[in-house]
Image (cartoon, rainbow, N blue to C red):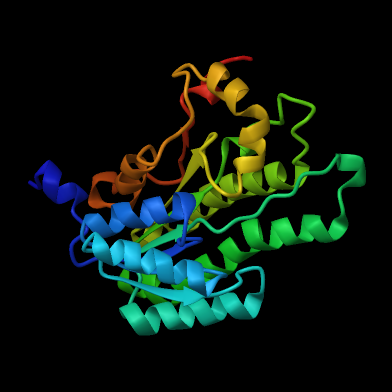
Length: 261
């Protein structure tokens, strides 16, 4: 019988983290690497990747990087090719790359809608398909963790939060997670999602500047997420500790989604 330490140990595992150069993606890369996984992180900007790799290596993490715009299908395939060439196989895939757009529904630009959907939904399908078919299914092992949002669980409580494209995309991620879990469980692959609430990041900073105090006040724990709050949940889904959990979405939001506002 494995010890708790062994269940959460990722020594010898490999992981691909998209959107891994900063914010939540970098925090999750830290968690995986510090538990022993060899990492490849991706993002659009090479200079941000260089800074992230230097940061991870200072922490003793075996990390590599590949620049890719996952809103483009050819870049998704290039990332899959590079990741498999660099790491040999992929045990853990964290689909974190995402975008948002703020506009009233009646005026939401179609090209902005497509940008959000291409990155937040289509790229997750394409990358999961490529890594699953080429690495996880043949090896009968895999851990896929999709980063959704509590925005995918409900509509917006404030009329000033006008993010219909983002909310819709994250709801799609949640049901994509359930559906893929149902199909790929037979191959020993688990597929789960994390649904963060308000966490400080470059993408969320505008909303936090407007609504951060209100969001913290609404949360039963009376605070926003911090640099450590996703790490434990991610490790549960990414390790042998979560081997009997699949198709689930875990909100990491200080309790916001559990109460009526």
